[in-house]
Image (cartoon, rainbow over all chains, first blue to last red; front, side):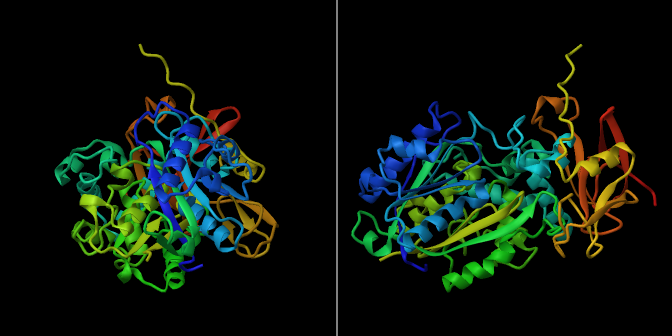
Length: 383
Length: 138
């Protein structure tokens, strides 16, 4: 699959706390804007792909609304951020296999005003493991991820200040992102003074539940050359497993599922972590950034905290991470907005936050906690 | 006087986990022991992930273990926990097998890594009991 499929267009809707519109509206706006970005017409679309957790418009209804009469390929993946990058990987497989020619990947979500994650009072019938946590008042993502973060702190001595370094760095990046919802710089003292949500997480460890949508247009690489924008090639796409809430197959939460998947990703790409110019790492919480720095091989195991605190992940550092401010500051569109930022960096149109000469990007999904699945992409600047 | 907080959700067993919840009601911490390879497993599932045997028996454990991770919830995520915050939930590795890790409320101490704990069975109504943890000296 290497370099055979390109991302030819990207778009975002406004990101906010209350879109005031349906997820159908958000999806359609983002998709039409991404097609405009690519220079393609809506009637050329023959594939749609998304992921949902019962919180967004059904893809067939969206296809009707967009006037797509013959949807040759579609994917409606039931899961959260852990499969966000798998959506793009699957679409690339479909194109490489010749099943579809023009696929739009999207995610539309009113995650602040309509359906908040953790589904308070809304247990999922197929999430049987929640029976062992919900009766104890342990049922929302900040609690689940705080449990993993604490295990990492106990095992490796990771500190609150190191978690804070992620929050401070990403806020500094968001200053340069007009889409970001939180753009006022913060200091480590501001971080340490922010209120507890679930220890060891403070307010600034948590991402911004967001209303909005993003979309990406995928076509064959050779076709992308003739379109409006510089193509970004899908160099590698991988799928992995992960921790469920409590299964004893993976009892140590201080290592994420990315550790097992990363060698496969780098092998498929023919590249290594040392080749990456910019990384967009899934940041539902600060902790997932630290653990992925380790588990994708950017530093040794247990040293994600010191690595982030060293300044290496800032713009101008050796590995700029979450250049748009991430979910902590731009907003939580459940994963695909990381891919959009990576594409923007590789096209060279990221403005004041541009990583000079960026050619290779890593973009990752949630590293396997809770859901038992993960996925990631390596992207390359095209010709 | 303010109104009482809404009721907390009760355990909602599935077909694989029913004996676990019945065990709590009887004052026992029960897990499955594989009939094929003898390994203990958690959470309750129909077959063994090591040897794939569907054969198993339910056995009662000592209910002793140690804290391997912990969180302290300050924010009220649902009204049922309005009067509980802040509260501590711990992950406990059981003495019988390190990779059996169960979650529950900790009472009677601030959580810390390595804290020895024992199970306490809390009857919440005639039909349902929950698993809590409390510190132990031995």
